[in-house]
Image 1 (spheres, rainbow, N blue to C red):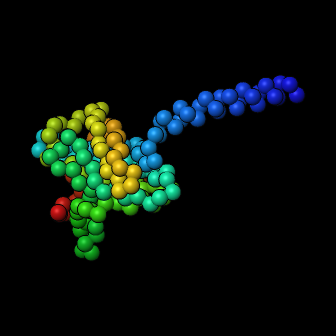
Image 2 (image 1 turned 180 degrees about the horizontal axis):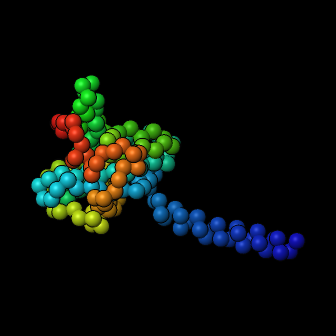
Image 3 (image 1 turned 90 degrees about the horizontal axis):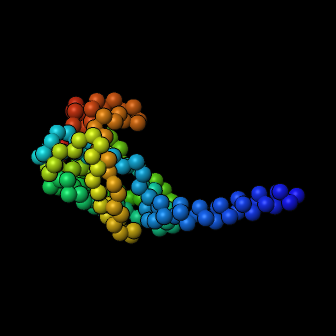
Length: 172
């Protein structure tokens, strides 16, 4: 019985020490996971950023803007079916809703952060800061890693990125 009490005390002490460390890993109410970018060419061309965001609060929020110094223009974009077999990529000025306790994925073929007019080459392994602006949570800065070889997780078959998508109209 004494061994069990010692074991229980050791587990409790370990948890008490580990919880503050875990909180430091996610100091914000909005958690952003698996942020990566793909470039469709070099300087002057475009790229996109994808990630999963999770609203850890009890208040609905909305991603309303994004900023990065690797592009002349950074916008929130999505794809819309135009009804004629053509998907149109378009700016979403109202941003993306992120309900309380929910997750929202920015993924190839869907919602994403568009990088227009790259100011530098984005080679595999490079990284850069991306500032995400939320209505309630404010600014969240994430480190984005460039992974031009990454395949879509959903098996969408988009070739080597949405720069190569057939039937894609990039409108404003």
